[in-house]
Length: 235
Image (tube, rainbow, N blue to C red; front, side, top):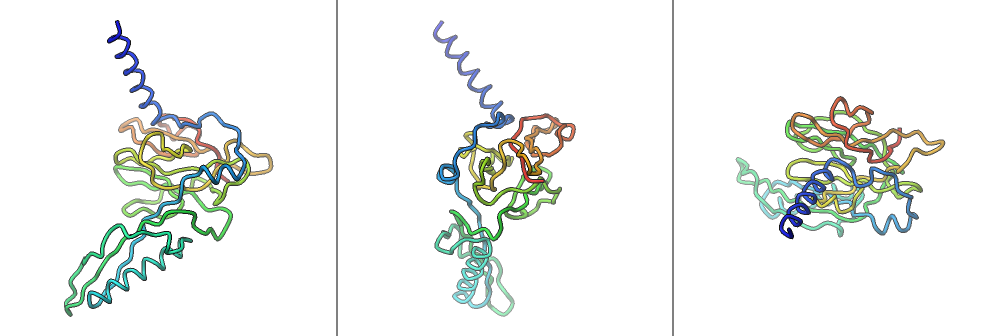
């Protein structure tokens, strides 16, 4: 009897985990937290930033590091917020005996935002669809905008995160990514429609043919499976 009870509980847990990957944790709107609390509980922005330099090896390394630092600053990070995670790696041997060297840094924290909002776009390649407000992922095609996000914790908003399960990216309002891999914070979106503010509903959807997760602002999930409301982006 105990064994049967445990198996039933295990089956229920597995079913709940599967459902969680389709239905957002915050499908039902929750009361907005105060701005101070939202900032404290929000996960960090994490961006991988690369640099490439050429010349004699030492010069190439210095150039690669400087290029990465410039790119980090352009994204709003202080270079002190960035940690070397790959390289220096020689990626090309030039005919004159010089080399090309690559480095990659992980920048994490609160980058400076030049404006109050930025655009959330959807990108696609054959094996994945992802929403991103920070960059155009390599190898992906732009499919179009999904509305604007705040760059700060505005009243009535919650953070939106980019997460990953195996090779499939998805967005979530759960800082723990619903038990999956955290990638970065994308920005803040409204939890409910706001009076006097133009918004569009951001939906989590699931493709019928391969169960690939994607976001949409179309009420019918573009003919695919409706997985719940993530929130409301700026129109």
